[in-house]
Image 1 (tube, rainbow, N blue to C red):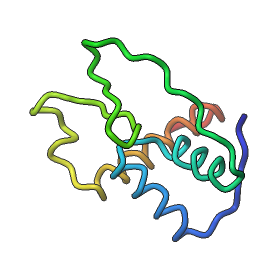
Image 2: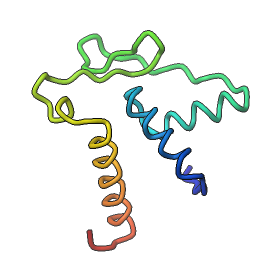
Image 3: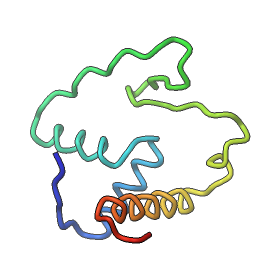
Image 4: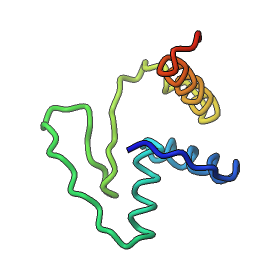
Length: 100
């Protein structure tokens, strides 16, 4: 379900930074934080094929392995956040049928 929240900018920045450093989406991070706040247990992760590029790390978070030449390996966290923001704006514009 989609929900719009009006949150302080510094809180949103911290959530995005934390999500990127943990290799997660903001959506998954926020869902986990809300579950913890409400005292609801985390759903069990789906099984992952043994030869998948996705692995579950020791903290239970998904880790996506990529080749050493992948563009993201040469980007700073700030660049990754800007790319994510631009991508989200483009997706929102497409959903609203607005020119990008």
